[in-house]
View 1 (cartoon, rainbow, N blue to C red):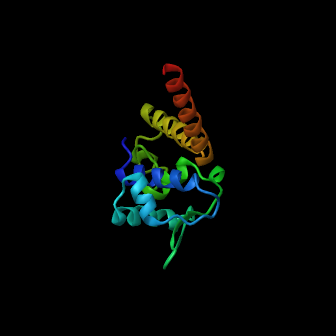
View 2 (cartoon, rainbow, N blue to C red):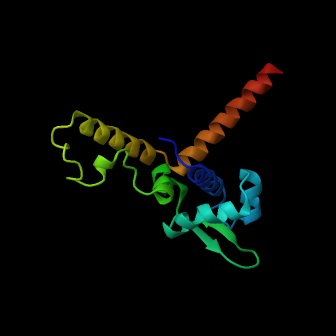
View 3 (cartoon, rainbow, N blue to C red):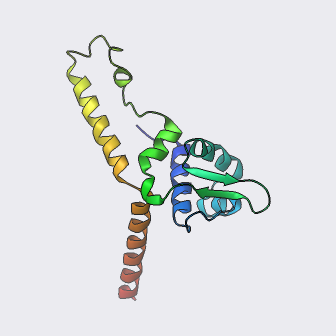
Length: 149
């Protein structure tokens, strides 16, 4: 399974918004420039996030986008679900009884377990955590560069 390019860019856009002060409106051009996303594609990928209540938008002069929720309350799972819909891994997990082999198929249980772990892991990564991890990694990189000089 590979997430779509739209989902990857949506995650990057939300991460950028999560680094801004709470409620601060960020111009579309700034998101596009820093995340290397075209304006039309940014508009397209933010629509599901706006609909899901993750991102807010303001039109007109001085308009742009902002994170509606605290970065600690938005997870990778939230963004992936908004972009991709339910994460099933296999059609047999779509709804009970959809597969006539569900009761005896040894792989059904494996798919269910893998899906549960994937959803759990994605849900564990809030954007506050991701911002903190990025800051820590950048700091460590700076320390290592200074030590090498």
